[in-house]
Length: 290
Image (tube, rainbow, N blue to C red):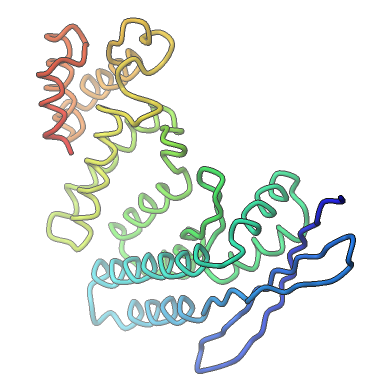
């Protein structure tokens, strides 16, 4: 029996309601034997919601009736909720598995109709990604920055760039840390220094969460890349990764008063006292970092 071929057909139905636009993507399954087309129920995303959100944010920034930090955090929080909303629609789509398998394979081959879908999603303020091989919608950092960076103060601009970097260079995938240890240490340093500038701003909570999240990744690791015996040089001894120790010591030496150094110093000292092994004392200490 010949294998059925999956073809993605993008049919966008546009209707106007104020500034909102609704677009519809339809997936058709074509059997080579029967030469018949069966169209599944469409996936409907109200792309106009994010356009309205972006436009209202720009208007607020221009009016200057609120501080930049309040406007930007309101925008990012609502934008994140839209990502969740659209992903719920996508994941509940009855032919999601077939669509995911098709696009993942075509993404590997870089075929044009997959690129068309990718471009359409990006045009409407989002991105398509495949974490652990599963199709997902995420934030589009170009969309976040465009028209906004030029309207905000220096601190807000720095925040947006740090925020976007976490999406442009995702730290983890498939229960593993996929950025370099140097990048991870640098993120901790940058978030730590930036935190000193936002003590009284709406950015504070997000910045603190990112600082400690990255710190925990460095100190503890994740399932497939644990901090202890992470890497061939330390795997047999089951000791803490030596490269991470070296990187932390560099920060301590060059930027001893930084927030990162203040966190690194007691941890490195504890590791030395415990022969760089994951003892009960180390485990108890790591619990305080979460």
